Length: 79
Image (cartoon, rainbow, N blue to C red; front, side, top):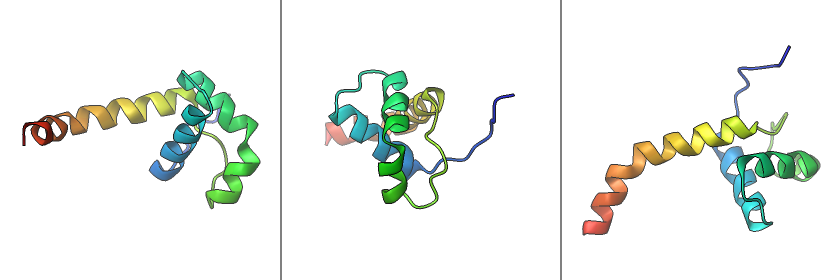
């Protein structure tokens, strides 16, 4: 059985995804793979990190982030 319902901090999701993209990741699968390959590095910098979020978690987080911030981003461009 897959261990579901893990809680990952927004800091960890953003930090890992930014590092992965800077290093060339182009999909959420690649972000997850990068995180798993560098898990010791991330554990040193993110206290309490037990595991790397799944590609689905990265996808859901950023999809929700975009939806919630679209109105504010649009109004900021108009100012």
